[in-house]
Length: 308
Image (cartoon, rainbow, N blue to C red; front, top):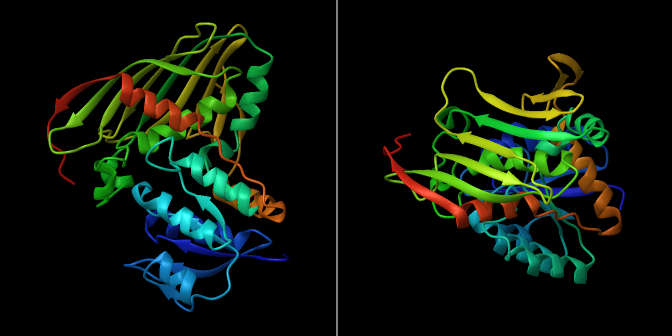
């Protein structure tokens, strides 16, 4: 296979803002079609559903699922059954258990299933992981606060069951934590604020730890106005590490030591192309497990209704 012919399924904001440009910039990847009920691209074959794409569309090797998570399991199963490689936008699904059958299908078909965590590919994440590996970590705090009206305008699905609410961005922070910290984390307590008219939280405070008792706290909030914060602070025996801008900048004791332009989605597609060569899969469910446990353990409060 010299070129991975990809169809994007679900053509909303994230597909337009990130996926189209990333595919165009990555050697070995090409955008071959779009499946979406409400949007298309000029000069590309367009289909209303993934079923129509698979039945009537041009030859493709892979699909990139950018639809809301509530429908991805069925779409991924259809694509794998048709012999296609599958990229899953984050979160990979609405529950942890629904991924196991897809992993099995991909293995049996020798096709790639790639559950993406784009924030792990932010430029300062790997330098942070390497720096922390040689230090004793004493505490971690996450502040992940943004304005939902700016970043998710009109996306009603995010407030429905399975839409995750504030955990849609919050899971990005958890994907970074589970990459840079040396030991697995688990949730010990959570406070979840649900708008009176929504089925998903608008804010959440989490307490986490590892097997050695490392104190980790996280604050997620969709109600932030003014400056937005996507920051992780790690105290160690040799100074404070700060990851800011969603993992784009790393500072030690306030001095910037790593910063680079955002190429997160290009890195995702480079990885997808490489995996598809052999049909290998990459499905790390650790961030999704932490969100699931936050819902299991979370103390719920009702706050004012949300109006977009």
